[in-house]
Image 1: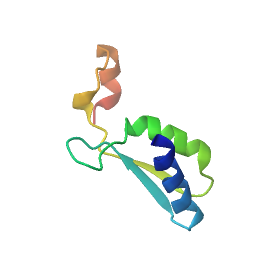
Image 2: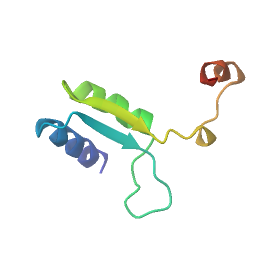
Image 3: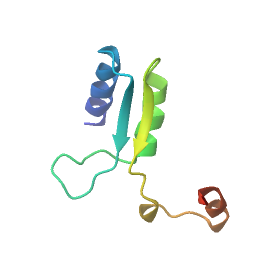
Image 4: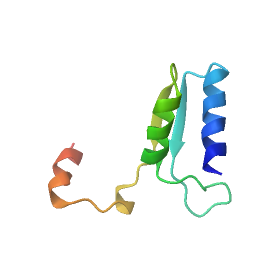
Length: 74
C-alpha cells in the first residue's frame, strides 16, 4: 500500500507537477499514509525536480525529548 502512495507521488512528478505534498490523516477512509516525515524522506530520494512539501506535521502525535523542544520555538 505504501508503495502505491509513493508510486502516485512519483507519477505526479513525471507528469510535470512542481511539488508533491505528504500529510497525515486520521479518522477517514483515505487516510492511510503513515508519518509524513517518513514518506517525505522516501520521496526526496525518488524525485529530481519536484519539491516535497510536508503538511500537517502534528506535534501532538510526536514524543519529543525535552532538549528537542528548542528547535520548535518560533
